[in-house]
Image (cartoon, rainbow, N blue to C red):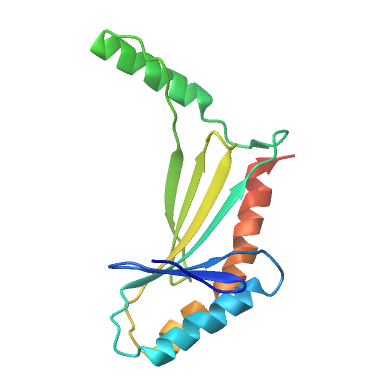
Length: 161
């Protein structure tokens, strides 16, 4: 099931509720925050174990990552080929790192990967809900726009233009 609204899509699933922008503009993050808070107010007894703020950036063709992983992937392909005594005909890879950061209430997951559409950088701010108070959850929901700005800083640090 998917509910499409003017600027957003709301996708409920068994263990997760996704609020996804249909259009990108300056107000979209504040709209997502408002919808998230509204859902929290209307469904106060819904158990919330975590909140994730996810951002995906697709690099332009002339851009590259400041960290290259192709040599690592080639070495791994050679090792697999040798171990299984067969030729690797195709492979894709991704590099995912998880960071615990001081003075934050989230875990940061950063993934770089090639894809048919181009190189992608995915940034996930994983907020485990340990303090189940409404104020704490509201504060996490309200950090969506700030986390987008932080993800852009990560992008600008990791991409060579």
